View 1 (cartoon, rainbow, N blue to C red):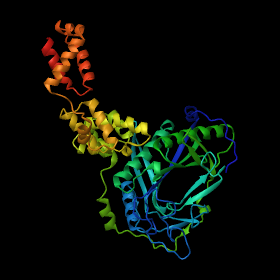
View 2: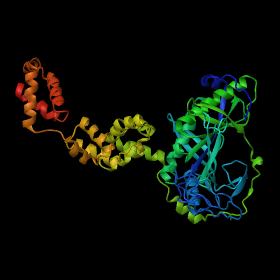
View 3: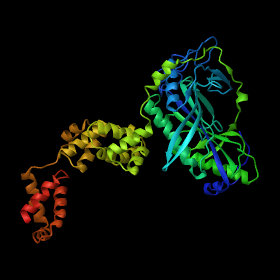
Length: 501
């Protein structure tokens, strides 16, 4: 670990007055295959530790790997979606290093012969388009997972002991590596965030990964260096590892710019090292000195044959690519009549696919957005879960809206219906029936409630008789309160005016 003391941070806005940040992003994507990259072990997330392992992924002597064909197919589709060239011939290599969660003491990866290379993506950030060049997308396997027990940070330092779970060892990974990214300094954090978000959307659209950053199935390494304004010489980089949210990617860039500027202003040198990101305050701390490629002693994997995808197969896979996420969002925005802000809010809340499914189930886009970004977003925030983990389906949300459209419940009652659905009381229809939530529109019951409200509020009633029709709101409110919000407000108003006007 580094022992260098860190000088005072320089505020980001001041740092970029004198330095230009240079970025490089490495995004690791766990593929959603049923089995691991080189063996037949299951890949179920959250299984009991060390229950999804075998001699191959544990690196036991004599065990021979076999390439997962579905993982190769996914790698090619990802490469095509990134506008990459697909290699006619490529092979695996051994990346040698010792770490407890890598049981073989090497990682089977690709080095100088990746399956996909020379691609790009175009990003729209605040109305400006930035092209990010993709150097390579290569296949490899994930490592196991270390759990450090004791201590306050969950890191190895200060822990009493460590536990190892090898279930993740051997999970298929695609690592997507950019070339250096140089954009206007003030845009660097937002561009980094937009790039990772674009990849996440792309992986979901391709259906090659669930891309759950909270579960580590998509994680980003943020490489950053600074160079003086006007200089062409790149500085020494740091690599902030395993950043697992869009917001954290942006915060990691901002912090590292401030930290690098502080070190350079103090006349010190930047150490080439990995860094840990801390969600609590957005800071980073030293990890280990960063190795160069030579230190890993790459050499071709002798136990695996080269991969040579036919051009016919590559073209067949090109035909399976979905509509690019950015183009799809623009199409949906136009179809739904959403403003730029509406669409940005929907995407930012992680509600786009939920709105799509709710509209497909019969709700209008405006109604679907209202529920997912309003009441349901509030409940998800209170529960500390994502919208897709809340426990209500798009079909159920569309069902609640249908009850409103039919006049059987109002918005207030609909919120109670959703409460029942979330509590596991059944479908919206079943909740309405069980809780007796349907709007009362019977003139007999409403008329009696209106008479009682008029009798209890003679001054308001007189104002209405005198022509002040807007005063009817007070009587409507009294009736709604008496009937626990279940009165048909429109019919109540009509009855009030019939009796008093």
